[in-house]
Amino acid sequence: MSGDRLAAVVSFVVGLYWFLQGLAYGYWIDMGPGPGFIPVLFGSLTVILSISLFLQTLRHKGATMSAGEVRTILLVSAAVGVTIFLMHILGAFTSLGLFLVAWLCLLEHYPLLAALKIAVPTILVAYLVFIVWLQVPFPKGFFGF
Image (cartoon, rainbow, N blue to C red; front, side, top):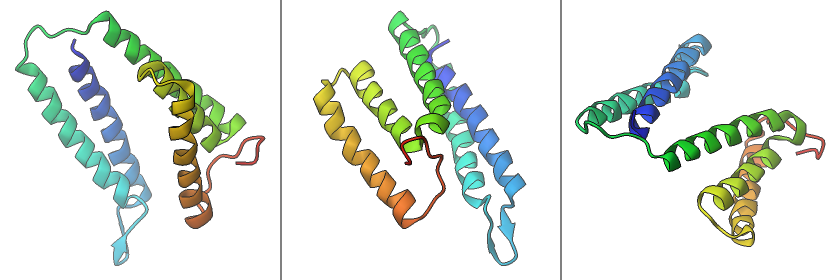
């Protein structure tokens, strides 16, 4: 199976989950969009695009994943799993910052200092937007953020 085909299947499952969860939250309430409006919208878009990607992969017969692609998929899957696990211990933004640094260093081969120059401002802006401005309740770790 090619990497694109695997990505299409995984994206389809995730999109379908978003769509169904959005319907459970309520797509349209009274005279306006409900809390499930965005998940339904993005879930539908993800499902449509994943089907499109899957159909495109059917045209390329014999495409298989290289050992490097398998390594990348396993590394990203492990990193996402560790990040999700650490969110309730370290907090969402600390965990996502570590994930971003790990991604940049291990997959993109950035030097640590360059990765930090990208990750720190990115997490700071996300913190200011989601916590300070929008007041979205993210998991907080023992650092308090």
